[in-house]
Length: 304
Image 1 (cartoon, helix red, strand yellow):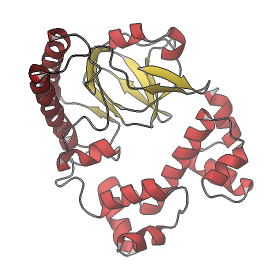
Image 2 (cartoon, helix red, strand yellow; image 1 turned 90 degrees about the vertical axis):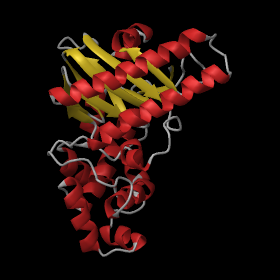
Image 3 (tube, one colour; image 1 turned 180 degrees about the vertical axis):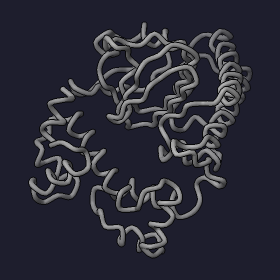
């Protein structure tokens, strides 16, 4: 991983020290802790790659997009590119002592499977608490990935390419795809099961359009018209998928982007509001307070 970026939130780019031509790295949490500078490990960072963390023991607290997630045996976390995170930490603020395994992979590394599209698009949950049987299945899957990754890492020098490496790389991609399908099947925090046909239907189409357009419109009717549905149909689909209305999802996405910009950039508050379609700073301030419970200035100071 390569560290760049602003002083408050560090940008971390994918860089595999074991195999340069492999878009996947499998490593224990302790190895990642030792690799990062102490100051970096204790600060928020923004990734340009996916990260799966499976906790097998120990306790800690992770922050993902300014929401805290307790970590203990059976916790599974998935971070998508662009999300702001802080590595799991203990009560003293230092990186937690976890028995955990990390899968770091680039967006183009997994095989193109319709069943995993929502997971990789970042529209699904961030955290799950696995049941004992689910944890057992995930541990077996991750162990197989660890074994094959070590075989790839140890077989040849870092820059190697060739038939053996290609075959192992293909197997790793398929094993990762299977793990992501398992993730897509997991229920969300409300107990709703994973989508029967991820990547299709009204809600996924809305989420993709929302990612493209949240900075230019917050009108549910406009999203519905672009997708060819009525506003009522769109809201029903969102409520069925998430328990929240389309309007609530739009406002939450805009508020999240505001938080990211406030934490990651030095843009004035008014400029953050303008970047998200607010012509008046006072309207942006009221919107932010309604969505987050505090003012933009207070949020920025708390992050710093």
